[in-house]
Length: 203
Image (tube, rainbow, N blue to C red; front, side, top):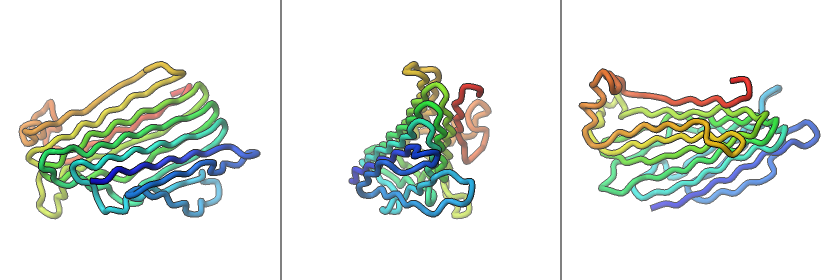
């Protein structure tokens, strides 16, 4: 059972974004490749364990100071393996100060049969800030002949603006996946779904 934490803070230093704070504990690591011309300061989040199992607990906090432009991406698809009962818990916090631009752009999360995932993303955007964030859920690896018949997926989003909740949404899939996946009011046969959130004064 792993309990990992990652904290990243970007700040504006004379018109150029710099890393001001970095904390990481297993199984989370953040790498910083060289950003191309005109690209924002970018960090790459890595899960060194190769996947998550029931009972794993991750906390990720990304902050962007006033006027800073920062991006965190995923190094590879996250894998949530089968569980005998315990949940994988992931708490995401995205905080953007006035005039900042913050992006959270991970790769997909692959759910294995009977995996259990509870993930909550909280976006706190000050007036004048912009945030682009997303998550992708893939139900098994189709090319490997995998299917997901049960387990738990609880994917929740809260968006706060000026300390006020302005939007909340959650997807909850529990136990009887085939019926929900096949239903017209469910996923209508789809094997993947995604959420993308853009917060801005002019959104």
